[in-house]
Image (cartoon, rainbow, N blue to C red):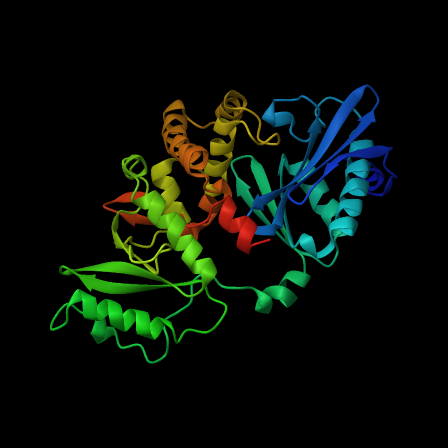
Length: 369
């Protein structure tokens, strides 16, 4: 691409466009250039944190993932880019601090360079990082306001209090009941703003995990998690950390007791599940459900992976894991985006497992909105 073309694409005024929908978690805009109709979309990546958004633009009714950005063969790339810039600028103006992170993807070196320049023009003060996944590049943009608001965030899990005595959690000389009582008593000393505290507790000669609720939000998460982990069908799926016991003395469990999973990196998890990253796993699950327009349907996503050089065998493995997540989403109302957080995964008996399933739409609507 010549320099003059880049300058034209970055500074030309866009064509007329219109909003089709604006909501708290999704927004759609449309425009037409020549004979081609385009769709610009913005959607929340993780409903637990509705300030994280994914942006895409593509030819309308185009299922080919390789044409996700709607530029291939149209000859109108400068007008498309300029219009996308105009829409995105207005989106950010209207949504303000509701948008603290933006993610989008591109394919091809020349187009990637163009998008990087576009970002610098549109969001000069935002931090930008870029990661390559096959022939695609993922961009992550962070609003500087995110750092200012970070201190105001409510942490889901808090560290143990300073007077915590690990010896009290050991098996020797103490009963499990006394260790539980010690944990519950000390958990009350945690700082305000936490919902649950997770601690290692010795049980029958092995380390296990005790999650104790700190407030109403923690109780709600414990309730959801206990229901799912103790469900016979869910426990047979093989992807959830096994539950040992939970508080049945209260309507919403004060505590949950599970097996301990080993920490794992995203690379280790994806080596087994055959995904480039957890985001790809979530996108496959969305494709299976057919609920996200920007992902497309299952077959179009498979075709996209095949074009990226992913083997049929790896796609089958990825599909197997994504099917389980889609099942959990459909039957237990678990937020799929929550599976994209590395902190929610671990390794148990050499296999990837989800260690936190306390977040569904009810918890989100009551405590995170």
